[in-house]
Figure (cartoon, rainbow, N blue to C red):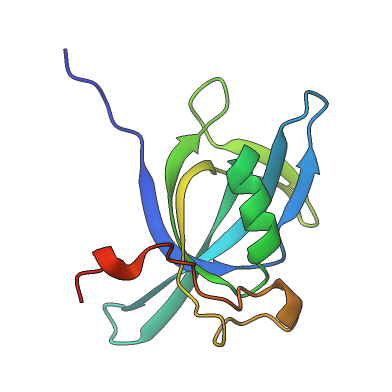
Length: 142
């Protein structure tokens, strides 16, 4: 029997600062939305630009790191598992414009695509401003 594979990967930009909280059981959770652009030329030759929004949720240590370093405008690569309601359909949410439906993504991998000096946020204290520390550079291939 074959197993199905539930994974979605994309690049985009955060539409707002991440929201972080701790659950009653003590787990850290971080929610954020990512705008994924889709530019194309339609059959009339007109350039069309559409945006798909993906609601993302991260847990535990990932949630702590993401809430510390991500901010509105951060460019990211995200990969994870789609989450649906109990019937396998998109979850519904009450918003400003009434009820809407959206898939949610449980983040399994996130790559920061901005460098410390080019990220789109205005709060410089939330940016990563140091490079990762290499403990022993004798094993570097260059």
